[in-house]
Image (cartoon, rainbow, N blue to C red; front, side, top):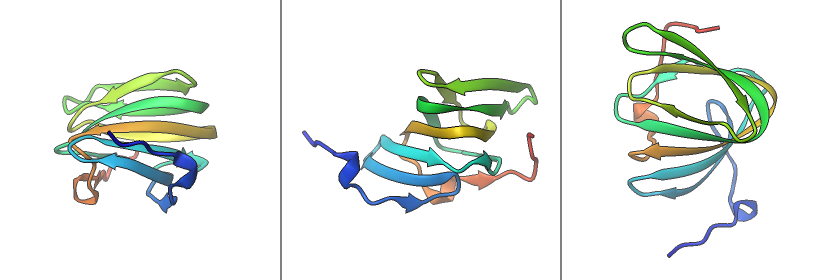
Length: 119
C-alpha cells in the first residue's frame, strides 16, 4: 500500500498547467490544474487517458482517428475517456482541476503534438 497527500507533492509545469503526479507504475494518477485558455492539441500512441473533473469548467474537443469531432462540456463530476490516437484539446474556462488516470503510465515521449488545432 502507498498513501499520497497532494498538499505535500511538488508541482511540475506541464503542457496543460501545474501537474502533481503521484502513482506512476503501469497506471499513472496525476492532479492537473489547467492553465486558463486553450491547451495544445495532442494525441497518444500508447496511452488511454481518463479525466475526472474535480472542479471548474471547460470544453474538451476530441477528434477520432476516423475524423469524427466531439465536444464534451467539462464540469465537476464529469468523467471522460480519451482513447489511443484521438486528438484532444481543452479550453479551460474557469480554474479547471482534473484528476488524470493514464493506462499505461503517461510519458513525455507519448504526448505527440498535433498540427491541427481543434478550436
